[in-house]
Amino acid sequence: MVKRNLLIITLMAALATPGCGRRSDLPPLAKVVGVVTLDGQPLKTGTIQFIPDKSKGTAGRMAVGGIGSDGHFEMTTLVEGDGAQVGHHLVGIQAYEVVGSQNSDSPTPIESKALIPEKYGDAATSGLTAEVVSGKVNTIHFDLKSRP
Image 1 (spheres, rainbow, N blue to C red):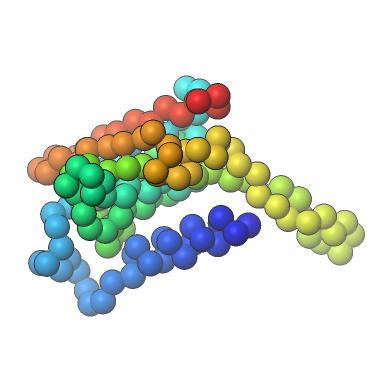
Image 2: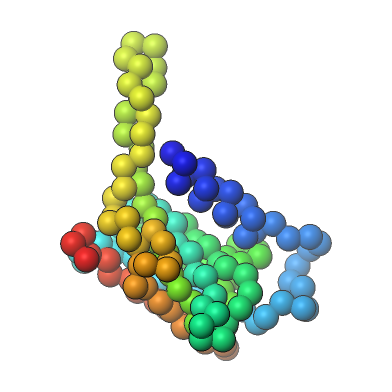
């Protein structure tokens, strides 16, 4: 539950920006779409983060995207679907399902269960990277393994 709350806070911080529209003082963005699979099957839920890789000269804002029921995602930095910063990124992917329910008949605690190995959730340890190139739609596929 703590990871889920942290993710929500991270998403809100990434999307919060003063004013309207694109600011001219920000690095260029490029559209990024793709698919996340687990052992060749679409991951049906989750979030994906692109974090600029400072070790490769990319600094700035991270981009986030929700993973749909067909595994597709679209990255957002400031405005929904605007993409990710051009450059190299470390990638983190998280996917959880809610287990249990709370109702008056059977008060079972609500917990979250990881749908993918925990290592993918931290961009620093996931082993996943992406390069976003200017002037085109970047289509990126991540095939995760249940036994990495």
